[in-house]
Amino acid sequence: MALSRWSFSDHYIFDVGKDDNEISCVEVCGFGQFNASEILNDYSYIENKAKEYGYGFFSRLELWAYLTLWARLSEKQIKYKDATVLINLLRMYGHIKEYVREPFQEGYMTDIDCIRSYLNQIIDYIEFRLFPEYHACKTASSMLELDRWRKERKNELQRQIQTL
View 1 (cartoon, one colour):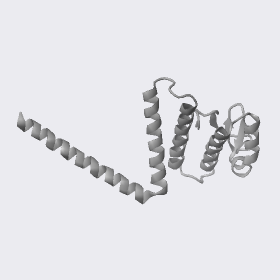
View 2 (tube, one colour; view 1 turned 180 degrees about the vertical axis):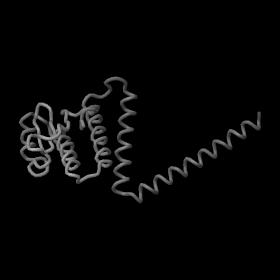
View 3 (cartoon, one colour; view 1 turned 135 degrees about the vertical axis):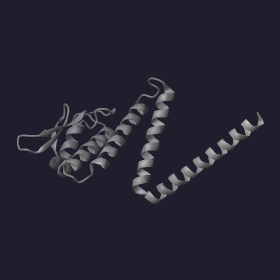
């Protein structure tokens, strides 16, 4: 499974399966292969290697997030569903990071709309995970507001039809 293939990250990370010792490994192309134990217990080695390769602070942070996510998933410390959501959040972060680096590449409105959508999804997920009661109230309130708007719109259309 490619972890960062579709994001704008500085690295291409994918699961390579098991090594000669039957230990699951992940590869960062042009950088090295690592197993879950190395990632979770001795990340300073990987961090120093990333510095040597010229990775900036945010690229190293993103790399750490991808590798830790993979390691926890392979060690069954995180559920697959949560891992999938977190991978998508990281990909959104990569897209936003790329946009900030070079704004208005193709069409500024589509990029801005995409970034706004990503940020809304990130905020929504964080609210859902950290503040579930607040998120539930906010969602219920939005649904009530949408129902009110639909009723008003329906009544307005009926009035327009009656005046014709």
